[in-house]
Length: 313
Image (cartoon, rainbow, N blue to C red; front, side, top):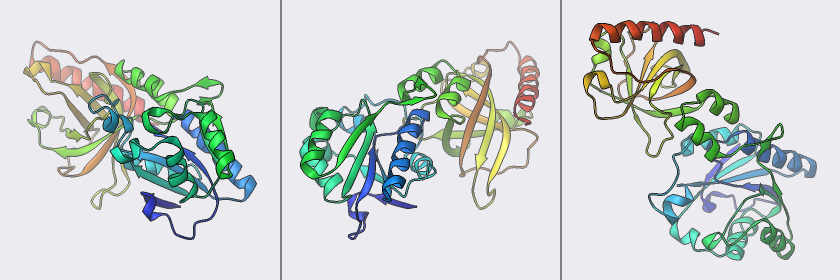
């Protein structure tokens, strides 16, 4: 499987291919349906599949500050797309120059000159070119001009329409179970472990405090069961059952919103500086302000017991 960052990394001898294009934030089940359709069509035609995605999110360039929270990091998105049976994933840097290309120029420079597209598959609501002037119908017209065919595919899975915005709404409500159903896997939040106030360790529940990636879609405040994932030299392929807390630690009059993960039955981990991820399984409860430290600790014991019960299988 090939990975390219930008058009210049496409080999000069690259032949005809079947291409799909989209932001694919979250690579949810609707996206998987589109990519799967592309892969099947490519197999029928005996051609390689190329997936084009963008970094940063186009809204970040076109309308700075208005882009949505991201369901996965660009690296994770490329990994997920690569795992769907594609032959190549190209992360296309989304720049002001790219945003100002007209639909015809975009098609010619990206799909025709570099990837020699024989067929293009996109979501039925796909828009492209300067000020999003291009749609599926125009893409089909340009295909006739440049000798490729094109089709728009609905973002559905088992008859259910799925969108990234719908999943963001679920996460805003703390519904990580619903989000996982739409994604086809648990929602993941990534970050580097940094030093916090170390209150958890003092209370007997050491936590990994994540400095999350910018613009991450973080579920609503609360306590969740899930898994802490680390794939470093020190902890290759590690995945620990975990209790996850999101919020401002109101019992301690905290102001900063944090994501903290307590790996169950592990007080020997040294994760400072490690890039880790938390996968969310179930929301256990709201974030609460307790009248005493003792009451907080009692509740934390219940949180851990519930998390162990949820993640033990």
